[in-house]
Structures are given as structure tokens and as C-alpha cells.
Length: 78
Image (cartoon, rainbow, N blue to C red; front, side, top):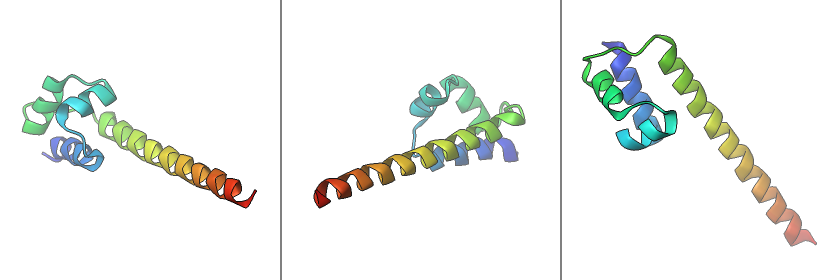
């Protein structure tokens, strides 16, 4: 079904393996395996939450990088 592929797609997007994904999102590895194999289906809200968290973390990362760059540039001007 769509759902387990969605979890797999989200995990691929992060570049994490199952263990890393499991630790990062606090979901047991076994559960992730079951979802990806289509033996179980995650609740509807879960892929959305994971997607939201991934986007949020990317955004924070970009903001931090931008801030670091600005700090470096200011340092060079002095």
C-alpha cells in the first residue's frame, strides 16, 4: 500500500538506515521493518508528523548555516 512506501520514502529522504531512523524518531526498528514490508500500517497521522519534523529540522539546519556564515563574514570585515 501507499503508507509503508511513504515511510520508506521519508526514511530514504533522510539518508538514514532503519536503526538511525528508529533512534531519531523513537520508533522501534521492528515496527519500521513491519511498515516497510507492508505487514503493518502506520496510523494516518504518523507519516505526516515525520514529514513535518524532517522539514522542520532541515529548515533549522539552513537557518543555523546562514547564521554561521553571517558571523564569519562579520568577523572578516572587522
